[in-house]
Each structure stands twice: as C-alpha cells, then as structure tokens.
Length: 96
Image (tube, rainbow, N blue to C red):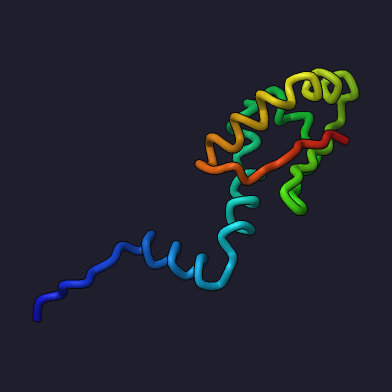
C-alpha cells in the first residue's frame, strides 16, 4: 500500500493549531519561552516572571537598574523576539 498524502508531525500539529484557533496563543507562549535565549543568562538571572496577555509581554525583574536599561532597549528586544518566533506576535514589552 503506497501513501500518497503523507504529512510530517509538524505539519499535522500546525494544521491542528490553525483549525482550533490556537496558533496565536502558541506563538505568544513561544515568545515568552524564548526570553532567556534572547537576553542571555546574566539578564535572565534577574527575571522573576514572564507572561503574555493580549500580545503584550510582561517581564518582572528584581533589579530596578536593569529594568530601566531594558526599557531603553525595548524596541530592539521586541524585534529580536518577533524575529525568533517568525512573525509579529508581541506588540509591546512592559517591564515591572
């Protein structure tokens, strides 16, 4: 028996996410998960929590000085995160 319509696991998962309207939620969670790899271990050490709600990435930091410095680089971080995800998922980053 020859299979003519074979799909990879990735294609099946992607089709399911699209069908159930979960693609946006999945991409938002992926963006939050990418935070440590984008900022590196030194900055991630001061990250207390990260979450995404309505396209806004909320980052809670334990250092006020670092929060201020990252706020100045917000646009660059936003481009890096959206570039890593592959599409503009995050509209804004807010530091707490």
